[in-house]
Amino acid sequence: MLSVNHLTFAYGRDVKPVIDDVTLDIAPGSVYGLLGRNGVGKTTLLQLIAGALTPRSGWVDLLGYDTRSRYPRTMAEIMVIPDRLQLPAVSIATFARVSAPFYPRWSDDDMARCLDTFGLDPRQRLDRLSLGQQKKAFMSFAIACNTSLLLMDEPTDGLDIPSKEAFRRIVAESMTDERAIIISTHQVRDLGQMLDHILILEPSGIVLDASLTDIASRLSFVTSDSRELLARSLYARPTFSGFEMVLPNTDGSETRVELEMLFSLAVERPDMMRSLFLTTPKATQDGN
Amino acid sequence: METNQLFSLSRLWRVMHRYMVENRATLILGAALILALMLIIGAILGFQATEELAEAQVEAAATAYMCVTALACIIIASGLFATLNTPSGAVSFLTLPATPYEICLSRWIIAVPLCLAWCFACIFLAEAARIGIALMVRVETVYRVPIDLLFAPNMGLSIFPLLYVKGILTIQSFFLLGSILWRGQNLIKTIGAIGAIGVFLYLVSSGVTIACIYFGARIPFTFYLAPTAYFSGVLCYILIIFNYTLTLIRLREAEVIQRW
Image (spheres, rainbow over the protein chains, first blue to last red):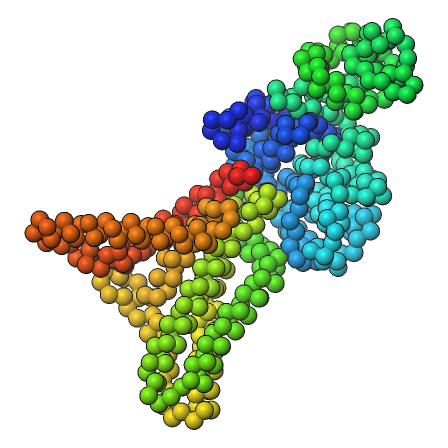
C-alpha cells in the first residue's frame, strides 16, 4: 500500500541528512510503531510520508502515487495527527462539517462513536478545550475520515489515563484490512499492546523493521538471575529480582515482547539487530 | 471524488468555505473594524464641515478612505498565510486535499476582491454618514466624494482605468508575497523591503539623470518621475503577476515548513 523508497532528507543543502536512505513497506491492516530517540527524525519521516516535505532523493508511493506531488486524491487518503495541534475557534461539529467533504469515506457514525468514547460533546468549541481534549477531538475527526493511511505523532501525549485506554479501544475498533496506521511514539508502555509491527529509526537508518510475531520468534524476553543466561544475553539490565534480558530465541517458545528492552537493544547494537532481522525469516531458515 | 487533480470549482468552494468558517471571528472583526474606521472618519469630517472647507473636505475624505482601504488590504494580505507559522498549521495546510492553486486562489478571493468590495461599500456608508451629519449641523454646501473619481483613468500607457485599485493591488501583492516569504513580522519586513527597493530605484534613477545631465544626453521620460515611474503603466501588471507567481511557487514548495 505504501512504500518508502531510498528516502533521504536534510534540513538544508550542506547539512547531514536527518533521514538517510530509508526504505520501508507498509502493509494495510496493521498498526506500525515508529520508535526512535529524540531528534532522530521520526516526525520528519512522517511529514515526508505525508508529502509535506520534499526529499533530497527517493520517493514515497501511496496507492500508486508519489505523495510529494500532493494530488488531492492522494491527500484524501492520508490523515496526519501532529504532536502539537492548532485548531480553529469553532465547535467540533462545525469543524467536522467543513472538513469532512474533503474525505470521500467520511463517517458521521464513526465521529459520533469516537467523541462518545472520549466523552466529548460535538457542540464544544475547539479553542475552549484543553490540549488533551483538543487532541481527542482531532483524533475522533481523523479516525472518522477513514483514510487508508493514518499517521500519528505522539498521539498519547497530553492524554490522561482513561483517555489513553479510550484511545487504544478506538484505534482497535477502527482498524480495517484497508487501513494502515503508523504511530510515532516514546510511550511504548501506553501503546505497546496495540502495535503489530515495530520500526526503529536510528541516525544510521532503520535498524528494525519487523512484526511482533517475527520479533517474538527470534528473541526471548526473560527476567532471571541466572548467570548462564546473562552470559548469553544480547542485552540485560538489572532489576530487583535479577536481570531483565533479551536472548536469542533458540527453543521456539514465544515470550511477550518488551518494547523498552527491544528498543534499548536496537540502540545499543544496531548492526546486530540489522543482521538478525534483515535476513530471511526464521521460519524459512528452519525449513518450517 | 473529483477526477481533476489540478483544479476543481467544487474543491475551491470547499476550501473557501472552510477558511471562512474557521476564520469567521477574525473576518467579521476585521470587516467591522474597517466599517467602524470609515464611519469614524465620515463622522469626524461631517462634524467639522464648514462652507469654506467644503472642497478641501472632499479631498481629505477621499484620501482618508483610500488610506484605510490600502491599510486593510495590506494587513489582510500579511495575515493570509499566518497559519503556516506553526508546524501543525503548515502540516494541515500542506496535507489538505486540495491543490495549492485552489488554496491560494480561495484566500486571494477573500483578501483581494472581497476585501476591496467591502471597503468600497464602507466608503459609501461613511459618505452617507458624513453628508448626513454635515447637513445635520446645518452646513448648506456639502460635496460628495465622487467615488467614480477613485476609478479615474490613469495617465500614460495604462490600459486599466482603475488607478487606485491598481495601486492597491500592486502594493498588496508585495505583502501577499511577504506573508509567505517570511516567518514572523512579515508586515514590517515587507515594508522594509519595499522601502529598500524604493531607495535603490531612486538612487539608480538619480544616477541616470545626473549622468544624462553631465553627458548632455536626453533624459528618458520615465526618469523624470522616478521612482514612481517604474510602478506606473504595464509594469504594475507585470509586478502583480510576478508577485502572485512567486507566492504560488513558494506555496507549492513544502520548504515552507522546513524553517523550524
